Image (cartoon, rainbow, N blue to C red; front, side, top):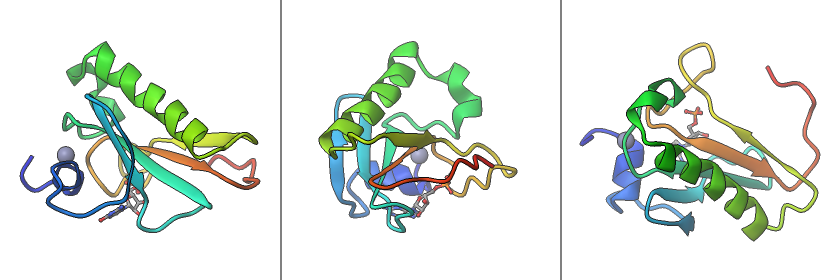
Length: 113
Ligand code: 5GP
Ligand code: ZN
């Protein structure tokens, strides 16, 4: 996807602070962190969001979740962490490339919505 911000980040055309990568995923620090640790995990494959999950292989989807766990371990989030994937307008998804926010490093509110 030539006009997708996260595809450009994955391709290295836009700089990012890499936290983790493997064959199927790339993880980098959010430019506007909401928590002491705020990392975005994205599949290398362009998918518009979780609603397009059927377009991805099980391997890609599993790799995203595994990468979230690896990021949390690497960042030392022993007290816990939260994974969020905003999908669509009601959830205020702003970048239309599937991504998982990995948040941690402090106590979060119990409000999910
Ligand atoms: P969404 O609102 O779609 O769930 O999350 C998009 C996230 O991407 C936001 O938290 C935003 O701060 C982050 N973001 C937007 N543009 C950039 C960028 O150019 N670089 C990085 N590292 N993060 C970005
Ligand atoms: Zn993309």
